[in-house]
Amino acid sequence: MRIIDLTHVISEDMPVYPGTEGPKLQPANSYEVDGFKETLMTMYTHTGTHMDPPAHLFKGRTTLDQFPIDQFVGKAAVIDCTALQEGQQITVEQINQNRENAERAEFILFHLGWDKYWGTPQYFGDYPYVDDEVVEFLIQGKKKGVGLDVIGIDPIADENLTIHKKLFQNNEIVVIENLRNLDLVGHNLFTFFALPLKHIDADGSPIRAIAVLD
Image (cartoon, rainbow, N blue to C red):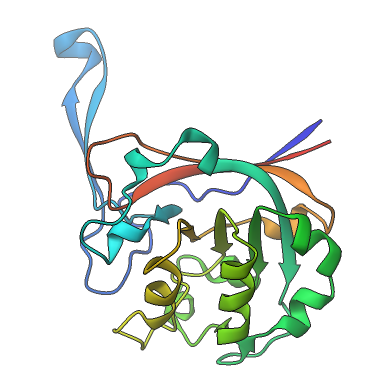
């Protein structure tokens, strides 16, 4: 068994969505004064490698704490999209390169190779994004989730969050953003864990995402 970490480290200087305040990691207790170390963490629920549920955009829809735990674990397939140029769309043509596994998978993870830009201005550039036919593939396939190694599933310029809305309005699906190391997983099915914090009314949460390869 091989385990691959697909999660970015949380730090005060990490990339965050434009307009969002970065996390704060403040010393709260120290070895010298209190005999132990403790840190006060302050950050938005959509910081770093994180997960969006339908309640992120729609009032009354499912929050992360309302999902059964098996929503966050399942078989996953990585779709290689690294040949796409900036601004191009992810289409079923990319899915068809790994179609059999994509149909069997509960999670579809799109590898754009964008994690190499983490920490640079280019990370917030014109990355590829999924087209309507791919959205329908995810919905009709009743996938548990979709993930990418970019800042969002919508284009950075789409303030309406059109793709999020199409996925979330009537479907029990989660969106996972800011993944990394998808190039290390390969093309076969593997077990994917994406576990959010369990807090009340969770409109989102940082996650620890890992791939378990047999």
